Image 1 (cartoon, rainbow, N blue to C red):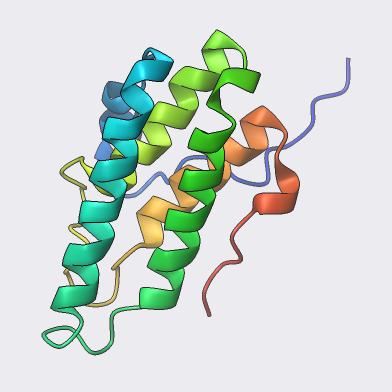
Image 2: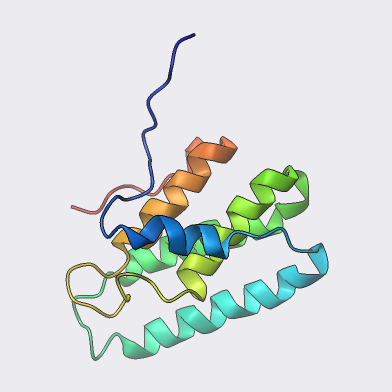
Length: 135
């Protein structure tokens, strides 16, 4: 058997990323998707409002993450139960969870968020939605 190396593993630092992500993973009813969309929108509104306090924050990266999360939620019913759990985990990690790296901290901002999302995108086979690593 040939093992394919993952392009987008979960970040190893900080070590709590994987456990926080796993705690966010849960299959939810399609009826709950509007609530998650609302949480995403609220999160983005808060980020937009805080840009004046954090002028180096990469709002473009946050917007890219947001758009991919919305696309995943729009297609939620097309995925297997396992994939749905991963999708909810990525959305919650970005929009709701207490990150190991809070998004307001200088330098890290959304580094862990986009890496978690890319990990999920790889797992579900949505390679065309990968978010490029910021330079």
